[in-house]
Image 1 (tube, rainbow, N blue to C red):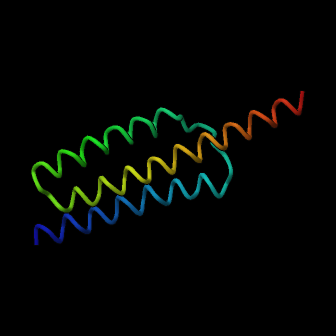
Image 2 (image 1 turned 90 degrees about the horizontal axis):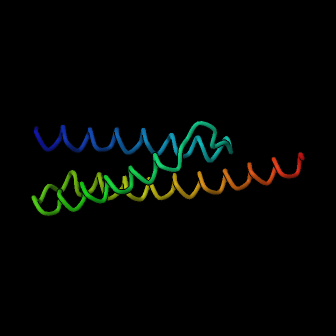
Length: 93
């Protein structure tokens, strides 16, 4: 039962965060989303993934490894959108 709770919670977290990154990409807006949010999330998730490996917790190894990938995707999308928004501002004047 303990493992089940861990895996279900992991899946909920991953889906929730991935959905937010997808929404940002789909809407094409980086408004109000700091690059530092993703940088901090990536750093923390790497640390948690390493820690989870050292204490051998498969649920958290899986979760935090996917959170690193999600953070990288979010960061890249955010950088791309900010560059695109900057170009639009330059074109306007």
